Amino acid sequence: FFAWSAAVLFYMLLSSFWAIRPGDTVQAVKNLLIVSLITAVTSLMVEEAADLKKLSYGMIWAFFAETVYVLSRLDLSQLGEKRIGAEYAELSQWNANAIGAFTAVGCVLCVLGMLQKRKKQQNFLLELCLAVFFLATTLLTGSRKALFIIGGTFVIFVVLYNGNRKRMR
Image (cartoon, rainbow, N blue to C red; front, top):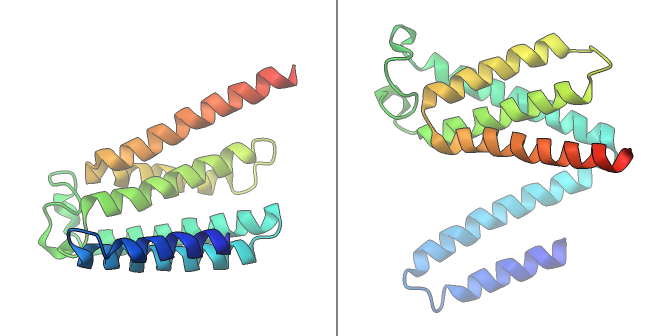
């Protein structure tokens, strides 16, 4: 992983020499470096399935806090009349697609967590409420990208789930 990340970063840095706009390439390298560092630290932290579940719950609560913050910046009486992130002056630093993306990922993580615990009803109601909250916020952003994240993930899940069921028979 580390060798691959270093090679990609090095190649991207070299590509700034022949890029039309080298500044954009340098910005992309910075973003990729940040993502690589986060991914490296995460891969070092996750050793078992239980660690992955803890990471997933941490992400859900981070998305929840971020969503509550975004909603707290809005005039809730106008909620539903305008797209969240697109037409509110209070959210000038936020983009509807960015808000939709993290609420969509939160929704997907909650639903997948519920499906993993079908037999154990531990935290099922909480995850259901969070999934509905994230889905409603995603719909209020009007982000097609976020809807694609949700829809695409569930299509992939259904295909993989049905494929595993057929092999088990």
